[in-house]
Image (tube, rainbow, N blue to C red):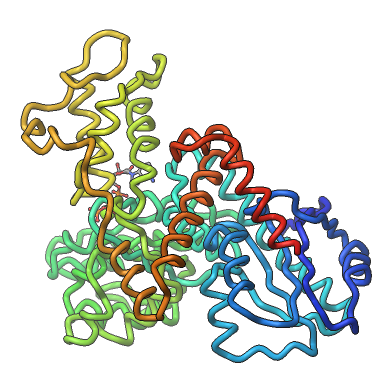
Length: 465
Ligand SMILES: Nc1ncnc2c1ncn2[C@@H]1O[C@H](COP(=O)(O)OP(=O)(O)OP(=O)(O)O)[C@@H](O)[C@H]1O
Ligand SMILES: [Mg+2]
């Protein structure tokens, strides 16, 4: 694998009280391995960073949550050997969004360990930013990006079987195609897709394993099955949760050992493929109630990726809709959507997820005339109901908001701190969405630019104090 040679530039926040280790020594060791550090001048910090500390308290978690943007930016928490962290503290730090927690034991070795992590993160980041991903897998929401980062990481660094779990229309098949395309196997073979809902039990053996001539009535010639065709490439078993139990038993060996016999044959063949499975069922529950074999489950779920439903990434709706508009008129200038149409798309529910949004956009496009923006009259008739009247004031407080507040109350957090946390989150999110631009963030939050700037300055002072 090619590792980027360029210098790494990361922010460094050093708040160690123990003087056995000094900031200068740390900066030098990091510099020696090609890691350039700088003191952050904005808060929340942008880009990857390192926090050195030797005493844990709640403010460490707050800082890490802010600067990792709840896990979206890569932040490494590093303690000195003298620091004592309780197990619970490590988990709290991880939950605050850091990518890893490590101890700075030996300057040379530790600096190299930091470098290894930065290189891995940059590699995944570069892939996520590549045209292949950006032009095909639309979305910038935290939920979508973190699912993508997990998948991209898996395909790039190992050959594990991947199980994609997600509701209908969330993009599982699209992701399977991307995982295959991005796979790093040399001389990659094809992606073979098998939809487990359409497999006819009597023919399934042949579909999967192929058959020899004369193996059954009508087998006039020998034929390869999916396992042979996927050799050197990937096999995508779609809706794997619908595989009948007897078929599940037949697949165990080939999935475990990558060897199989054709129907009616005695020769063992080898095959080598990446297995990608998808389901919209809760397979662990199926395993518990006997609907899916546990041994097969553990073999197909080398890595499990949850594909988030659209309601968990509503920030992506407009970008997805714009993408579908472009797809429908690839040759022409993309059509805009006016404010009301955007509001309508954002307020609507999508049980069929991205597919449902895609269909809705197509229906609006069939109705649209001219080259001006898509307008309210393009919204299909059956979508026009009374609920459109209160779109502007549609409830934004959902169950997850209630859950967070309930958790805060049960942890004894008072009203003042709850309010402050909500405010901090709103600032962090608005600044991030507006690329740290105070003016645009202020407009989004309905406050003055000066208020945003003061807030940024105040926070920076408190973190660096
Ligand atoms: N992030 C995305 N960017 C662009 N298009 C997407 C995205 N996610 C889904 N789509 C599109 O939405 C449609 C449904 O996606 P896909 O078929 O991959 O979903 P699925 O999870 O396999 O659904 P099902 O469970 O019903 O089979 C496809 O046309 C796909 O191209
Ligand atoms: Mg599918």
